[in-house]
Image (cartoon, rainbow, N blue to C red; front, side, top):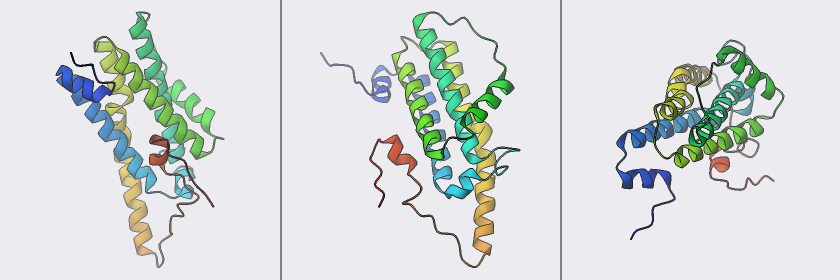
Length: 194
């Protein structure tokens, strides 16, 4: 008798659960696009106020997304435990609190928080006995739908920076020794700095 895989995507594939597999694919694709766009920016660009949305930096956007991952993880834990009964959420208030709570945090901390919150959310999803409508809605809200809401603005801003940079005489080089890689955090690789 084969043992079930501990990898959620492999386990889903084995179970033939197409809707969940498609949901995870959409989540992973959106997350990796977000990371790729953020990784293409310099530290100064990540922190530039009012660069991305009115009043937000790219770092603020990442903090906002991390908070939604954390909220989804908590809701999924409640669903798994049978204690979730829906909730009214003041979205604007939650968004403002999340961004403000991380305003003074270094971007490296915000990145780590985003990775940790996403991992918890996906771990809670893996622990679900079944994909309930509430669980699916929260994963979509925190993942693919949330990326779809913010990625167009981020793409446009990154493109605007590229056009501006290419029209200047000397493009700014990204010093990779001072900007930790998002992928290093995601894969838990040590960052080595001289």
